Length: 202
View 1 (cartoon, rainbow, N blue to C red):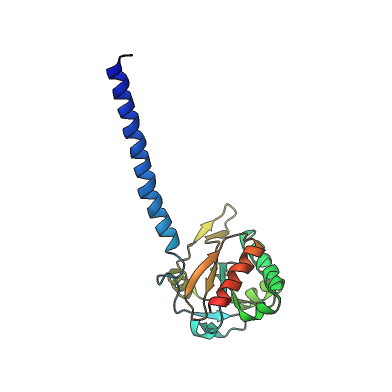
View 2 (cartoon, rainbow, N blue to C red):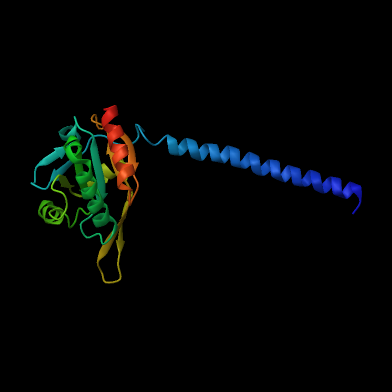
């Protein structure tokens, strides 16, 4: 290979490397910015009106004053919801005396099947401090939009349906502002540290 060809090959390789580096810097920065902008976002959270397990109307104003832990799901969920609620129950126990300084809500996205009675029966196997909230289609659509929760009814082969939904657990400060999430299947020690930090900053 002639020196001229080697030089051209070297220049071409350098241009390719520089292009790749520039791509990673630009798009990597965008991804980091997008992710870090989520906690504390004013675009997540706000007023809603639902019904609790006793049939009483509940709005955001009813749980202000304490940090809130909120999970969205449905009672006919076969895996994500029960495992998250069991994990949350273990977290509540691990928090000890600090546990009563938080609100805990399970919001059902299944407006057709999950009324107050169904929620009450379902939640009876979890920690009693986890309160169920439900509503009609319009109310559930409204809170899902307010909290940027994805949910979609998916028909099954046997003529029934399941619900695809966001699996994260939401964290709100005492003023009802969104401050972050706990990932699905969260680690108990890491979650406890996050909640203690939320208490300290409240």
